[in-house]
Amino acid sequence: MGFELPDTGFNPQAHAPAVTYPLSRPRLLLGVLVLVLCLALCVDLAWLALGSVADWRPWVGLLATAGVAAWCVWQAPLTVSGSLSWDGHDWWWENAAGPQHGSIQARLDTQSGLLVRMAVDAGTSHWLWLSQASEPGRWLALRRAIHAPGQTQVIATSSAPAPHS
Image (cartoon, rainbow, N blue to C red; front, side, top):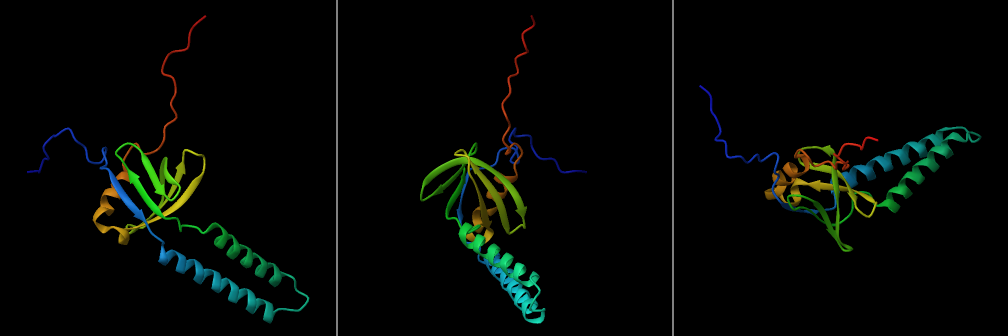
């Protein structure tokens, strides 16, 4: 004896609902990044203090840690603001520069957070962190929209047969 759903012709997984979701600063991820960089700096300083004066490798480690830290500050990863919208057909990122059309690719799903790559039509891409804490009421709709079948871009090709000579 099984339970059957009525055939309504609507597949909620194939037709994700329209949703707008706010982007927020990922405090936990930024905290982890700062912690990792601080630990790397401590290791580099200990290596420098305990190593030989003539050893150049601790200086390379320190330089690499400083370079990674500078790159993180310069890139400001995952700290963009605005909102991400799915209108039922297209993805939009709305920020201070205005709405930008593009495609989304989920790169990490932790159930309560999503790391996505937004490739905008202008040719640039942005990494966005979406947290369930930002808008818990819309979280499941957002996840359905991101993971729904057919969300990847397909390159259009001509279906007409090649002419024969």
